[in-house]
Amino acid sequence: MLKIGLTGGIGSGKSTVCGLFAEFGVPIVDADLIARQLVAPGQPALSLIVKSFGSQMLNQDGSLNRAKLRNAVFTDADKKRELDGIMHPLVYAQIAAEVNALTAEYCVIAVPLLLESKNPYAVDRVLLIDCPVDVQIARVIARDKLTRQQVQAIIDSQMSRPERLSKAHDVIENVAGPEQLAEQVKRLHNSYILLATVRTQSA
Ligand code: ADP
Image (cartoon, rainbow, N blue to C red; front, side, top):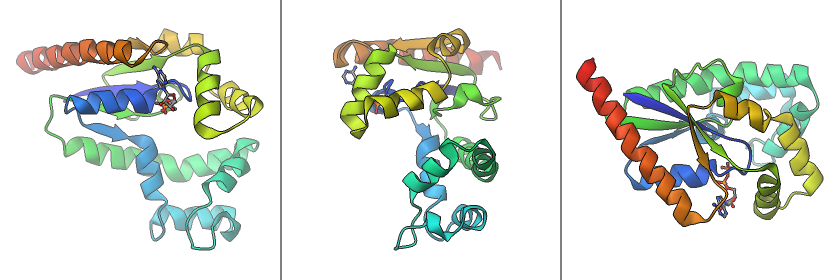
């Protein structure tokens, strides 16, 4: 099955674009969603996190305090590596399991940090959702009620826009309204179906 890795900076429109692919019946494997499910109470990843970071990372009800954990690793590279060491192998394994269970012509694997990784997801193509930094900032301020400085700090911690653009096979420019976005998704969907068919025939 053809595997499309969908990525982009915060607020670029990844979730919105995934929703549009899903409307065409394309299966979406979402790394963020998987990571959230993996740290649910009772899951082994949560016990490993508590072992490394202490029980102060838990809310009263035993669920993970995600904001606290995010703050703990944001400014501490060693802690970040430790958390990645716990989460990444589990996320890769779960993504592989979900992809293997699919029977579609192609699927979209949405991974915010796809380009920062060494492609353990084995995607065939990288689809970048792109928009100018100013647009990213405005969207995230509106969506997450963060300050401009907070959003800028997150953007600064991510890969730069030119570097991302240099690594993508396909790019969706998400600067205009919903109609233009839907049109771009439709075009790409058709080309991915074609590509998947050609690959199957030549296999
Ligand atoms: P990401 O998943 O990359 O962080 P989202 O898809 O959540 O980004 O989009 C960020 C915010 O911007 C959301 O509130 C979304 O509704 C909005 N948004 C996304 N694309 C557009 C667009 N083309 N026009 C207007 N708002 C958009």
